[in-house]
Image (tube, rainbow, N blue to C red; front, side):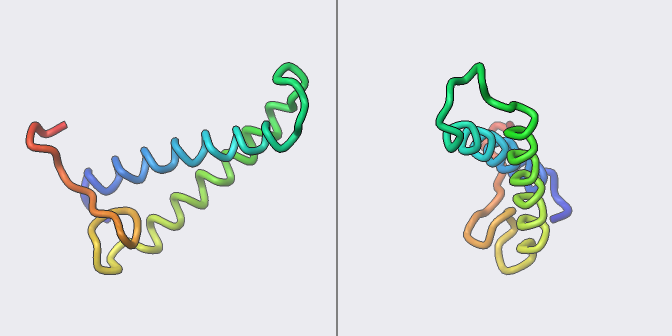
Length: 80
């Protein structure tokens, strides 16, 4: 949990989860894109991102150095 790779992987997971949560809220509405309550949709995405962060922190140190139980945060050979 105290590595840059962990936090980079966690940040990527939070962004991905935010987008998925927001799009799920928009899609569940079943109305046009212009009629969506974007504040509410972003709120759902934000809550999902916070839960992803809490999950990453709670599962850190459970055997893998990554943000998830089965993930490993590693550095690429080029340091990217």
